[in-house]
Length: 286
Image 1 (tube, helix red, strand yellow):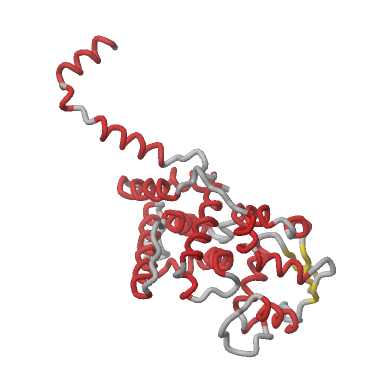
Image 2 (cartoon, helix red, strand yellow):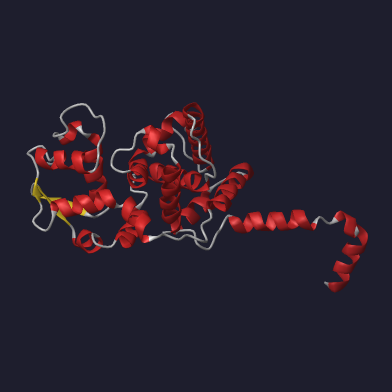
């Protein structure tokens, strides 16, 4: 082996060996399998086909900075405040739901006032007409913090334990996401978390923000194609399909980043970007 290496070295010459390029390729290969990645993310990496798609995935993973994540208690408390409020509101005795399975008007009104729901049509007392309140309750249930039983909404044992510990509650939310039910939705949500975690700049201008959102959906659609997903007709997934695919998990990102009601103007703030990135990074390593 030593003789062979000597021969190859002499025949090629040092001017033919680009160490920088070699190191970049090695770093790129290692970046595809970061030690901190969750099993869900590693599975996504292993199923991704095509050089271009894998290179894009590698760049996202590298930019996501998954190896060093810190969470301060104040930020964690702010991010899970809506869930803590709901758990406190329901309390140990639970809440009797309406016949249609919704929160009674008195609790909807309390949520609207105390969690600052803005500009929704109606009096803010009917849950089915106040989507932010309904999304809060539904995501809390799917996260295992609440459960419905015989028309009663109760806090689970897990919810009771986590209610007073914002750091652990935020870690639990991240660990349980994606909450999407179907495999294609879960893959789309994982890619959404990657693109969110890898975002490096704030887009404050409304038109530029919309363009950035469309570019993100296009990237997600392309990577879903590299994972083998197709529509029922055999066509590739399009950018316009992504909003529906990631809607369940997008609700959690928005809720933890800007509160129960997050209009577009709040999603263009530095605080929203930082909190969304934090939750996305935690989800990718949990």
